[in-house]
Amino acid sequence: MTKIIHEVKKEDSGLRDKLMKPMSRNSFLQFAGATAAATGLVLAGCDNDDDGVSTMGTVDLGSGDTGILNYAYLLEQLEAAFYVQVIATPFTGMTAAEKTILTDIRDHELAHRDFFKYALGASAIASVEVNFASIDFTNRASVLGTAKAFEDLGVSAYNGAGKLIENTDYLLLAGKIVSVEARHASAIRDLLNPFSADYAGDDVVTVSQGLDGAKTPAEVLTIAAAYVKTTVKFDKLPS
Amino acid sequence: MNIFKIIEEIEKTDPEVTQRLSRRDMFRQSSSFGKKVAIAAIPLAMGSMFKKAYGQSSSSVTEVLNYALTLEYLENEFYAMGVAASGLIPANRLAIFQQISKHEAAHVKFLKEVLTSMSATPVEKPAFDFTAGGSFSDVFTNYDTFLALAQAFEDTGVRAYKGRAGELISNDTVLTAALQIHSVEARHASMVRRLRAEKGWISGSSRGSLPSATQAVYDGEDNVTQGGANVTTLGYSAQTVTEAFDEPLAPDKVLAIAGLFIKK
Image (cartoon, rainbow over all chains, first blue to last red; front, side, top):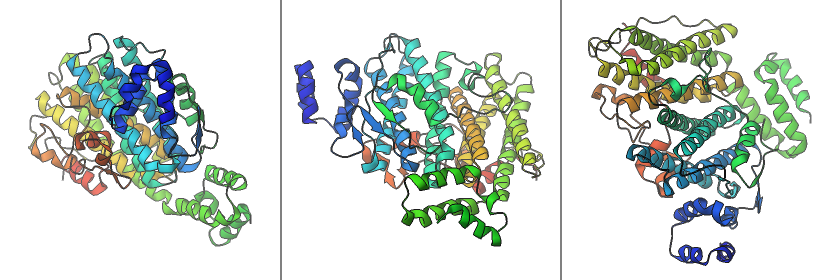
């Protein structure tokens, strides 16, 4: 932590003062996530004291159910960091109703993220560094389009990972979260194209069988890689 | 010690052992033995593999599928009738319900096909009474009543699938399909709730503006303990935590709700 603050100091001495003020750990992570792109801050450093499974710039998800939980933790980190930024720098013309929805979603994703971190304990991967350079946070279409992509990706990730889980308690846990991600996806899609069929559109739910997406970790992580600077090793995950 | 040798031994007393263990399980488990698992750990890993195979028979998988089919019959008929009822759904909301109706019809067809492919007999469609004996007599003439029941059915459907996913863990194909239906129901639920000026997600065990007769749909959604941890202690309000985690509903509770709409 001290080391990071020194790193940050090189780039922005004002930021150091902000960081040195008493802050809860959560608000530090939110703050750090929101400014990661601007400062090049490596969030991985925040967790160096409580896990031994990562080196700077690389995380290894591990194997078995732990690997799948780390996979979920990674995706929740990505979503949480995104929505923290969305609320920190609202797009032009964000309505009160949109802000309420997006703030709720941010809080859900933060709760998911911190739950996984807590549940994984010493097995948790470090916090990853995100790359949101392709997103224009001032632009509604860019933000909501990304939100839609993240939520649909999250749904298909959990749906595809279910069969890789051995422990039924973890399977239930994944089930408790995936339906919330699907509720988010539905709401975001409806913001983009109100009162149409898009909330569960033919682009994401098969017409013939009425099935939502299901993707393998490799498929999901290939897509997510565009938004994650940290190298993610997932070769030991069950398949 | 060789896993295939062990299975051979078991085959002498249980000729169906290889059918109980899916090929994927055998490959997944056995390939990891060589690489990572110490010999000493094999009995433990084997134990979990066999527990998985013997814990759920295929008859319980088909029982879950028939349970799901019963709920899909209910939803399918409800939306088919709603979409067909002239003057019920406003024209600028029709696309939403046509989409749900299309999905529920597809789910019915799909579940029947899966059951048939497993040499099981799909249950017959029950005779439904969506007025629940007169409690919702205007269900197909009053849009608000229709919406209220739609919300109750969708939120129940999400909880119902979630509550039985664990019983499908021995069958990867069926489990994945069930999860893929489960999240579609959640998309529906979010949309219908928002049409009723509710949040797309469930706060606490609140039924919102739904009639008190629907409270059973939401009982237990106020749970804040996940994986043994009270998530509110991580710095989140009970509202956020309960919204962030949907809860399962036991089959007896689900069938009690569905039973209100099945003709006696």
